[in-house]
Image 1 (cartoon, rainbow, N blue to C red):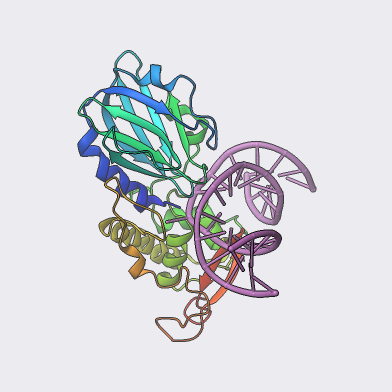
Image 2 (cartoon, protein in one colour):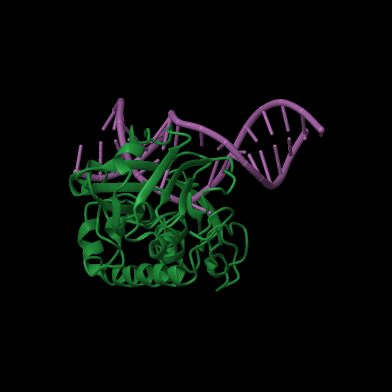
Length: 273
DNA sequence: CGAACGACCTGCAGGC
DNA sequence: TGCCTGCAGGTCGTTC
């Protein structure tokens, strides 16, 4: 569900309200997520100060200091969202974790499908979930030369290559589809047979589209909301994602829909080669 | 090492 | 109205 822009939007929405406050209570109403929520999370977090809130890939990292120094990592999976509530607001179905801070904001983790993650890590940098991740797409480490070099031995379709978190993080099904359309590259083409100059274009388009989507508050397909419960507005900018069997906005020919790696993939066979 | 695929889970839309 | 199927923003673990 949430890709990088939605996670970044969430971060920006909640950070100003929570930074430098102290955890006063934690309620885990449903511990069965992708992995069990860390045992005893309430005792670990209580009385600790939130010193830094940042993002790595699609993980939100809450760095705490106090009796226990470490990081709470939250991944939103396919259907997760975080929002700020008042402690006495009524719990909605699928509000699985609630963390109350000393300024009376309560952070609620909501996730119908429960593919998300809430874990306490003492040493996140070395944790297997985080230490094998590729570069951030908006960093200087990610560019066309990097993609070109990394792709030389890869036979997978370029769309799957772009969605591989060991190649680059944060690019999911929506933005991979859109960036390939903007770049004029067929999602089906083998990663290793794409020329360097085309990867230069692709890297630029990935950066542009992610930055634009962040400015728009992300893409809301049905249930994504930011920390304040508001949707994102990038959906109106999508050109191929979710538009199978509709005319291409550029050439008017019918868009095609295929499956790649089990994911719906929409593209224009005329504009994308 | 890389590739393919099943697994996890709920909600919703569409067909009959 | 109800039942069934398939599909959805992710990604890990297993198998070959």
